[in-house]
Image (tube, rainbow, N blue to C red):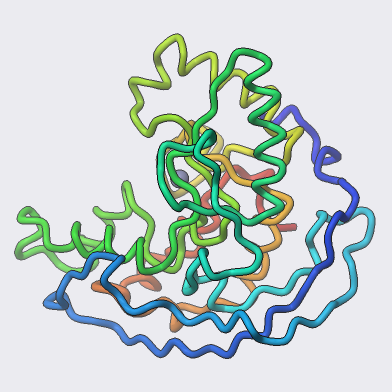
Length: 284
Ligand SMILES: [Zn+2]
């Protein structure tokens, strides 16, 4: 899939870049392992003041990614917002997903729709299983796993390391950004089937034309972090810039509000997992 050059990403700017001025209202603190588990839906709405002033800033230069000038708030980078209330997010239509009320950033969704049409014309069905998952949603997954019977007596560090084999730590998931999608199935058996192989081959050959790249590729090239995920594709024209800003602005002290959050630094979650993507896709 890396045969595609990044020239594919040099697309004209089609929309204005904005600075969303959102005060950092969230003041969550680390919780102990005895914290109650609340389903994501039951939690307090995450703060996002959609009436805030937008400020137009300089557009990216022609050699840069199409939305490189957008400045993201910490809340956006950490997934601490409600996609349904965010002006840059759009609900995914029924024909593109099996889920209700899931969202992507508008630019990512526009190019997904072009890709979906092209795939369909080639006899390949793409269905979005998962798109934006905010902090609260990811925390719901995390806290449920935290209380597993098999973790009784285990250190927090070992629990975190075990959960992270398959799940992102809240605040560090690319699914927070509204740029990343899971297609068709998260079961290995599907991707080993004739249908799965056909879908994957099509994505490898064509997805980059629409800005989508597989982030969790085969680890043979030295990539760290999660195991290979053939279903997880990222809209790099936005995601690479969000990743760059994440690296520049988010600190371990920002990774708070869930069981085991204090282990993030010791496990070097930023270097091992956030940066554990296909090397070609890392921020420059
Ligand atoms: Zn995913």
